[in-house]
Image (cartoon, rainbow, N blue to C red; front, side, top):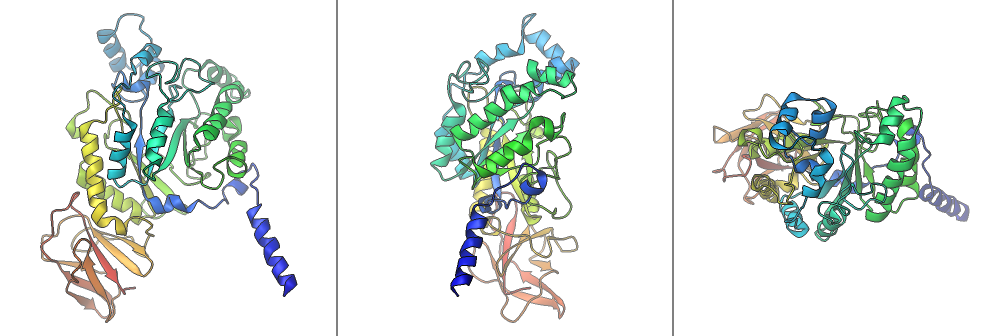
Length: 448
């Protein structure tokens, strides 16, 4: 018995001390920290110098000077003096009304469990005082404030997980352009700018999620991605809690990393083989703030709720983006959408948080659209459109004599009848209360 005990202890110590090596076989085998799958809902925040022109999208600088998009060229010629350069927008990024506590309150009210802020987008401007981005960061110019740190403190006080978006490449950084012109056979940008900045960011802010992007122009060997991730998983101050996505080099998306993004607004038709996330934006045209945004450009609340439900039913997380203004205010229409999601989750969150995909994810032959989630022995049928009848038919569940059906938000059991001996049930609905997002959840206990 003593020998067996020693073997068990040795095994546990070995597991605890296991280290990941700098290759995808080892890194991809790391279990995803449980908090991420349980969270299900997050808020994405695109904010930076691009919020000042507030035109076209957060890619404005590239569209103007990289692609020479005539729409952007004309916009600048009409509204700014000759010779005006993009860096001259930075001093106008005042963030004078930025109140991180107010933002954190909105994010908490949205029902989100994690928040991801752009620490650095492709323009290279960092929303913190990066020592590797002299005079092109939010402390040296513009707000003269540590935006990453201030929001992180407020978010964490509300027990929300905090993540940071970081672009690997920078459109016009001279070291990156030099490496690019050399066919990425040199790594001056990576060694002198990217990696020192990433290490500093992790040690300083201890994010629980790194949302990597801007990887597609070069392979992961150029970015030194596997070496960085091995350090992140083995020795960093967040090694036990950190979650990362799959954008670490050309060809890595939907193949390597912590969870799959695959592509912006990724919408699979069935559960992927790995944990995944759909990132999408309330403004369907842009991720960053646009001054010429129209109401017709925005996702409606019912569309957001339907998208969220579909994503979670297929095993994904839902990361919903908003773009604050350069002044640091949250556009009221974005706040309204976020609070609407939260109002729906306060009633229906039981079917979302910490849920798992059921054996059937959706029914196409039901009387109304239905998506399923599960939690233990309980199954949730989420109806994403108000039924035109007083009944709803669910063909997937197999009932028993002890089956119980309730509507979340109304504790009284509902009447139901089996469809056939092989399964299915018809539920008699009560007068459905008005629901934010026009979606209701039936809880089914003791079904298979």
